[in-house]
Length: 225
Image (cartoon, rainbow, N blue to C red; front, side, top):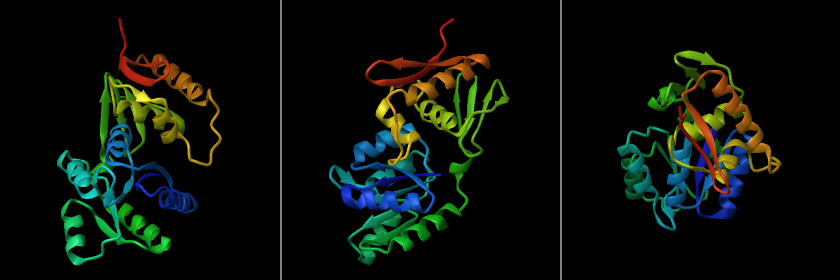
């Protein structure tokens, strides 16, 4: 289960991600609103931890924008401001819970687990590209309605691409989405998984294919006749 931590304090973000890893969660990091938007567009997350004060904007505005486009991913908002007015404002923007800094890490994990127990529309998100459909809740892929079997890494790779059909996904973003910060990723590791994904899609007569944009990243687009 992967979480997104949006926090501009590098040391705090590192500690949160390390602690989440120990609690059994994988996580990605973003340090600004702009970076968070790019990452969210490219991948699905079970929940997000969002700092209120970010260098290029307000965490509340980010959450509000996500809610306005129908994103129901659970959000735990972090802030050093603990007034009632600030809490009401944060929850009013669409956050599901609110935690004031400094906090006990055990409480952070407990609140995240509580959010993940709540039913939400995110769990049934069906993504489509050509004749390929991806159920992000069930983690199941279909081509022309027929189910296909993929490894966990191949599923994660397809998901980050199918959420951005026709757009280039940077290689760095792919690596961050597939691997944890403590994993040793070799230069050709992503290409190995990409080769497997391409073969599975080709063998299943998919109408979409993955292209490499050298020096930049990857793109999922309609297969040329």
